[in-house]
Image (cartoon, rainbow, N blue to C red):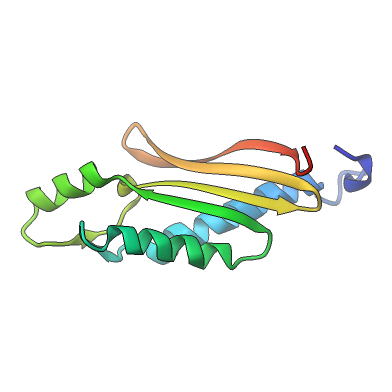
Length: 128
């Protein structure tokens, strides 16, 4: 990456650090805005699209992919008393791509040991 995007004193975040921060902001927004939303097998796809479109509105967002884990959702609905349940991270796999000042960050949320873990997957020059 280009040295013009860094601060030798360390007092100003680098472009890569800012891009990672932006990815985290988008995940926080996505998760906390939609957690608790009523979801059913029939509404899952449209809810996923709404989540993608809402987060893609944010600055620097290149792409968002939300996949509902249909088998987990169906099992929860089968075990419950209603035809819907509330959306939680256990039903989602999410990928967010952010670009800031020539730096591209890919971040992902996946279930790990029963917990929806969000992490940075890659930080690269946006041109390459």
